[in-house]
Image (tube, rainbow, N blue to C red; front, side, top):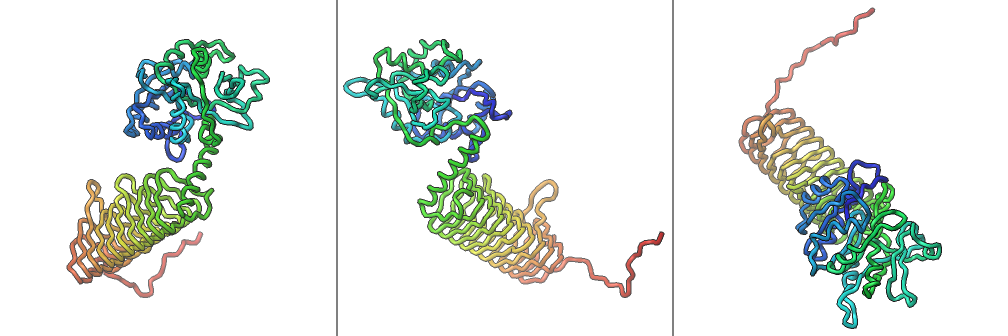
Length: 462
């Protein structure tokens, strides 16, 4: 169900597209559904329908998705009624909410297992429930006298004082055979305090048909917590991040402070990995054995090999092209690695150095205030402070080749396309636009002129 407006979010973005851990809330739900080997997902849209549907199609997780629209929005039962024409009679329907992102696939698998009845009964209606110390706002689970099965779900506004004391609540998630669900949905009415069609009313019709209604009760409130405000979104974000931090520490990762880690993708770590505070990981990141990440780093779509050190305030963003960092490399502080940066073993990239779409072979160094774009750099190259590759002519990009053992002086401009021959030296302050021979010293700058006893201009007196 993804039709709600989310008024309390105070945002023009539909609620189910608000992001948690860098992913839309609805994206989390659909990713979980894909883990269930679902035949397909049916997304019920309403508010911002075109935007929501376009976002789902763009993500393309591989799970077949069908869309139906709920216009106007007349309650949860009315929402699911819109899906009836696309539900196959032989299917098992799991009803999920697009703003409840952190339900685990294992929990849903256990819920679906509850549908299969015992003693020859072919099916049951299964509800996911939770016991809460403060159940305010949730539908209460009313059980039979013996407590084995559920008799009804009573919404907060329709509950009696006695029912309001019940602490077991309905999570909004159920599993039910499609054929029976269609029959019960057809019987819903809006004779209640809200004037809406409640999905929870299918329980009373199941009971009336002699079908057992069972509850799979869990203890983890985070799994069924929905998002209705920026405050709730922030709280759920921290709960999610702490969960991921604990998973990493169980694997042996050393986190300086688990409360100051943000994982917005997939992070794979080897042994003895250390991560300092305020680091953000996005996309797909792999850290090899013994990697150390300094504080305040942002790393996205990168493969960092064993023994590498990434110092503070470094920004690595591989996007689609990716970034690789070789074994024992030293990066930062304040370095920037952009898509296509491929660094070999023991490469040094120092403070305020930017590398884009370039390969640096073993032992190459660019330690200060430099730019390497569209370059191929050989082994043991020393690239001076303030030097750049001028790779763009205003229309096209061109490549610079710096062969093994080259020394590039400070404040040089290498105007691509150009090749600096192996073992060569480029004198500081040179602008090199032609290929240089191996072993040569190349200097291309204006001749120095000194004027003796020169007088600086003076301000005129008033």
